[in-house]
Image (cartoon, rainbow, N blue to C red):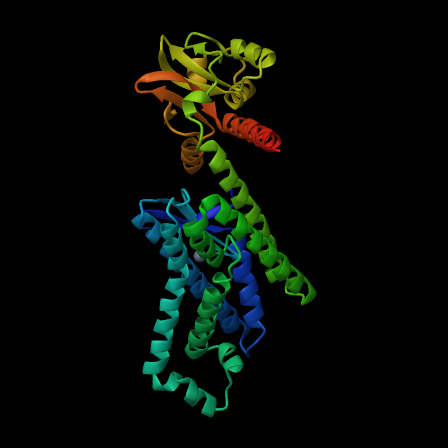
Length: 382
Ligand SMILES: [Zn+2]
């Protein structure tokens, strides 16, 4: 369970809200209820304001998603959280220019929204800032005004803030992604990621300290997210450079025990006790029928008292990988589909299984081997 609720589907992209989002709606309602004479009107105004803000955030994320789709990359979902939205794009674009355009598309949406709001203000004489200022009401009062005018000015301020915040070059914020893309055009992706993450983490520490000292907890929390996000992106980028060098056909378990469809669960339990293997292919001759994992066995043992056949509990919807795919392709595809174990094929021929753990293991070993080779190369030079 990931504590999110699907509220809509736009352009084939599911839009979900995290349940903590409702907490923010409540907080906003409570905050505005205390401001006017009528707490119910104030509360409703607070809710409308927050919904309008999150509509702008959703449009921002759709900007990223639709630009990504233009370059052939799908979005798994858009998730709205109290601190903002995330468009979960299936993979990082290969070309720096594509990454730049995908990153810039989000803030650009807020620029367009701000421009439309300014236009409304310009067309409508009653809303004009000059008139309102003559009226004796400053901008601060305007954004606190519980009226359509107040709503428009509040949203304008919010959209301008969204643009400015997202342009901070702190990777993995949009501005940081743009910076990485620009650096990558010259230095290549691994180096660019390293530099952009370093800048992102330095800025995150700065933001965090400032947020902490000024008592701005939201800012401090955002800084923590930026810091963690930057280190995650660095490790993904490192994994990519290593995993892209090996093929799936070199990394699947060639000595795995497989099951026949006539085998019973008790036999799998024996294998689980006497080997480290957690996943089993159920085969008929050379043909793969399905996969039985350690979790499937545990679940079956918990609900079925008798020793049933593995064919009754195996998973027949198997995710397929090609032996010629790189391990990095495998990592991306399995991550996008959220599968843990995949079947490796050479054309029509089933070869064996590859799990996320196998990929992590391959990464650990390859990193170690590479480091050793580098050290040896350095000692050979000196
Ligand atoms: Zn964005």
